[in-house]
Length: 142
Length: 94
Image 1 (cartoon, rainbow over the protein chains, first blue to last red):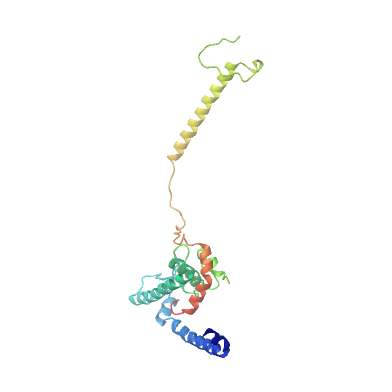
Image 2: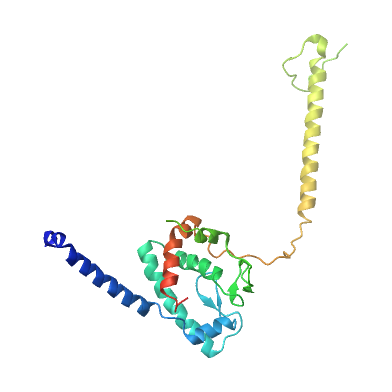
């Protein structure tokens, strides 16, 4: 069977093409854009990025904001758990590393939890206050 | 002329006869020992006095709670690439 495959490169090409096509189909399904309600809550500073990789509330949330944030956090928890398993890390380690990047990626005006635990609003052209260990998350090995 | 009294044990002579009598040396030694004890007592006394005056004041800066104390930097470094990929692949969740 394997020998047959090796002798027929066009078939391999066809198969890998099919695999790529499937992957291309799968990616948009996984990576849907942000829920508009979530996007609005971020922009309004009703939710912010916590240092532990989840969303928090800089001010007392409305029931709707809480629902949106809970949904995102449940999804995140699921992703962290899956990825931590494949990366042989703890869920907390994976979530923390993600938080490092997410805080760095916050848009101006969005809220994040600073190193001292207080809520900060991200200012344009200003590095966010993060855990010193986060510097390792910015350097990309490989 | 030295008059010897058997009031203490004389120390073995370590100095020659012209360098001072063993009685004088022993007396000197005792005196210095007494002085040392007095000094130690004074130090202890002042330490106690200072100890009684320690005041605890609240820090003016907020206390930083290190939640992720057991997360090591090398783990963060190792996970960085996969984390970046995960964020890109799941825009709805991040």
